[in-house]
Length: 555
Image (cartoon, rainbow, N blue to C red; front, side):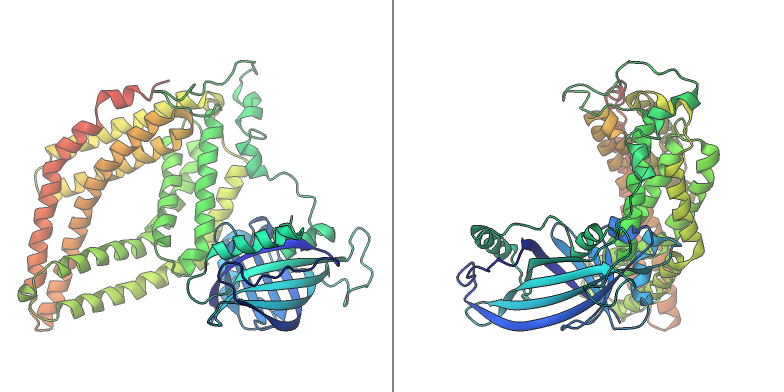
């Protein structure tokens, strides 16, 4: 079973002449206690093209010290990483390799570099003797994995052994860990000439100094965002002539916003790339059941699919439509878990609002049993999806699409022009659906029409959000107005779903001889709530559909 710890540390350069300052007295430090010397031996794993390293992730097998085992480190913010640990084994453990599957795709994880470290540890303690931080002075030897068995052995041509000295200061307090202590320690170190390390990690420095870091060609995906290999250099494929005309990005910071200059292809591909980045980064969080991670991953999936559908003038729909179908599948699989989360929160809150005198029977227990059963089912389904071949194929397809994007002629046109057209087209679709919903008879027909309007509102909002770099504040304000419509319609749809769950709960309670009065009461409240949303819709829509918001989008 893997354990997780939050690593908050800073690294500093050192050499044979470096001496630590007296750290007793800084912040809450009362004493500095020698902890002895540790000999550590670590073998780092990555793909042959070092995909983990490029993402700031490390996977190692380490012996020696107090935490021997497998360690996977994931970025968790500036100066922080989540370290997930597993017991020693001969090969990388599945509970860790699954967390980097979205990064490595179908590539093998192989030993890359070996590090031996002689670590001298000092513990900083407060007046009560509680540990606050550790200061480690490390003497490090690094060489290519498999090329030498001990420091000092010769490496192959172009690859050498590396050796250096560094200092680490890491917060270790079990309770509140104050980064202010790191700031104090840094000032004390700076006073004796010790400066922050240039490399972000031992692995990064080892790869650099041993010549193991590959001569990485510019990432083709990033090249598209910068115009290299993207719309700027593909104009010849559009049948357009190069011109010296400047882009039509918005000027200034007034009514029209301050969007950057660029082509429609640049705009859309940057947005697509960002959503793929979010999906990949959230993959390990979803696997570890981090709160809200399923929701955020599902939103990124929907945004990506929406971009393909909204910006068909930029990306060839013949290529993106099948990908959009796979994104729809992924969003649906994630939706099982996310919908359960939302529904459970809604029902728990609703039950809590019912006076105890009206809670007849074991209502809380019945709801808890129902929720746990559905949670187990949905959780297993999400994990099976992320472990499946179909998900892996989707990620590979998205990377391939960004490397060789199916750009259409309009991709070379100014971003603001094409973005405004796309947003307004989606708005017109939304307007038709809202009118249909308002005209529909009350009941199931209206429920279905309102749900279709909600999906159109979400697509329009996402299109406007994607357009913000080109359209500036007008797109932001427009998206905000449409979001209010979406939220209202979303609450209505949640009520429809909640009523279905309440009917199921009432039936189960009835069959168990518990009675379904309380669930019936909640059903009635949900009906009233949905009716309120329907009455509010004309007013909210009137505000969102004001002509001035659409006029401001036009270049």
